[in-house]
Image (tube, rainbow, N blue to C red; front, side, top):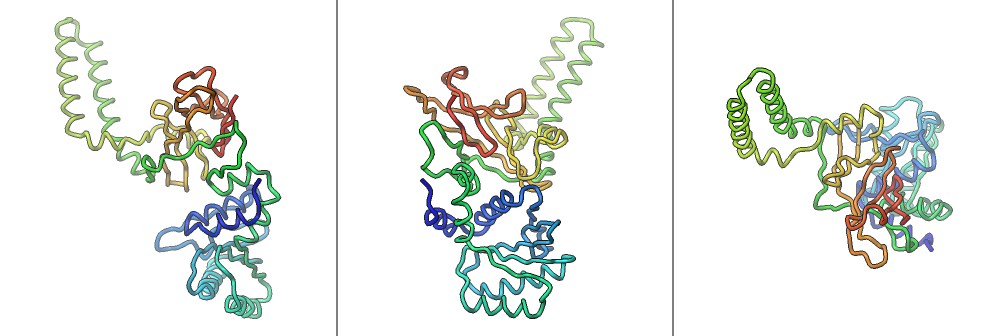
Length: 318
């Protein structure tokens, strides 16, 4: 069974974006759809907030800095009130210790802006809140499996060696050679079918096309390896199946999933588990069912060795 100290230690050990992701997961669970995560816009920054709740005008700044925390609080606060309208509450989220120096800065800011509430949310506070949540929700918020689940529940882990982050434009650019080759082959096939009558001429046309395609692919092999399924990503986006922070199956043939980190930024993952069915040593990969939900199927027996998979990639043996 999970305890507060264990959760606290996990959150304390996370740095940078890892802690920010866990904190955002918790706030999203607490506030539901009203919590909006903010991505840093390069040199423009994030406007002094990593997330906000528009209805209540609460703004969250997240940090794992261990040096000069007081300065970080002051800078994020001023940046937030300068760049956001009607700030009613500023909350500094951190997994570092808030000491007397930091408390003095917070008191100073409160006196200077008495209409705005200032609070801190530490990893200890999050751990105390999480202990009241169902165990599987805690595991999902922490972003990785902890070995406290039952014998029939497994977690489809990411293969870090296959993980790749890119923008939509990079996906289109890197997929272009595959699309051009497909268009050329299709055009030649249609032309030979409709405009060439002699069988020998059709055969010659196909041989020449195959030779040119082979040469084209060999000369662009490096680019072919970067293929990123741009058309599938666009389809998932336009059909509403790939919202920001969602991850879905992208290609069943290669067992790849796609996560939409922000509006135009994505990460490719490959997730799998070892089958826990008695006597089986196969690998279980993810597939999409007709209703859009995910299911895990073992390569050794796709019909009988199946797993019900939720949106956090926890699978239950059926």
